[in-house]
Image (cartoon, rainbow, N blue to C red):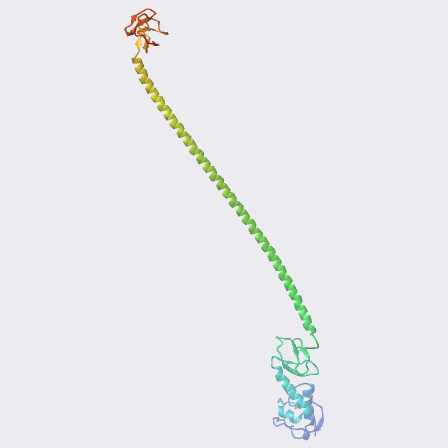
Length: 305
């Protein structure tokens, strides 16, 4: 009886199929292992699998490392172990493989500190950020640096523009504040000047009012003095007139008042009197010329009606 293998489509006898201890497939038995070795080699080298399923239809079990070592060739098993190691290393976040196709080594490298890794094995540089082997500088890094530089320049230009606008606004604000300050200063000075003029005017008015009051007081005092002098003069005049009248006599003819203030006793009633001549206060008629020769003194007669 022949069996058609589902993987390699090879006809071989059922008794030639090798067996796995964990596989319960009834067709499993002992025999040649060449076919399973080819199957494992194909999965490892061609497909890069490290989890290899049992080739029998309906079997869901996976071959373990011991089975793979038993049936695979030495070269295939070494590659299998290398694949397992690579998988384990790839699970380390900071582990990076050398991107030199002729190297295949790897090492711990944190790309956040430096995207360029220098391989400890071959000495070649690799850009771990972009996954490219490089000899000098990574072209993508250069492009990204240029892009970053361009963005930085644009950002710097934007910041300068914002700074310029801010400075213009600040300059306008300062000018407006200065204008308001000057306006307030002008108003303050005008108010001070108005108050000063008002104070000067008030003082001038007070001075003028004081002078007027003083002048009025002086004039009032002078009027009072004048009134007092007139009153005294009137009183004196009245007193003198009364005394004067008491010292006068009437002409015996025309009755005009006559005052004797000197001379002899011969008297004449002068104009506007009647012109009569008489002697002393006895009213004795006499001639025009004095002949008494006695008591000769300067004689003055005053006629008063």
